[in-house]
Amino acid sequence: MPDQLTLATQADRGFEAHRKPTPRDGFLAEMDKVVPWSEVCAAVEHPLRVVRRQFGHVKARYRGLARNGAPMLTLFTLSNVWMVRERLQAQTG
Image (cartoon, rainbow, N blue to C red; front, side):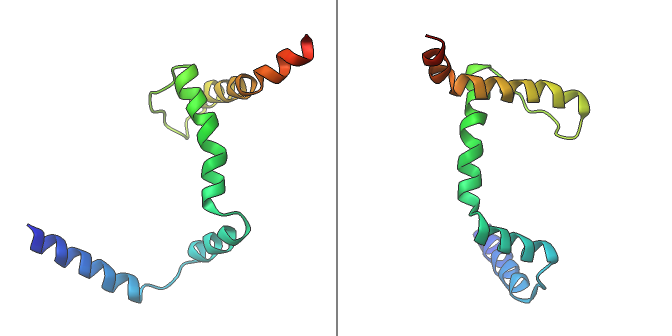
């Protein structure tokens, strides 16, 4: 089994060396110069954690369905309020 894994890995390396870059590859490389991918991930991970932990929304949903859009929008709106709750409480007194 390890020999097959090694052969598959070597075959992929050979393919990647001769693969033409697609327009998507160029776009992603250009965007990575503007905003690094790690910054995008860091900006998304905290609200997603709040939605999962505070509101118990841990089940996977399909992205394209409209009926899943409204609950997710509501959950992320609530997560934004949850993250700034201390500032809001300080303003109200």
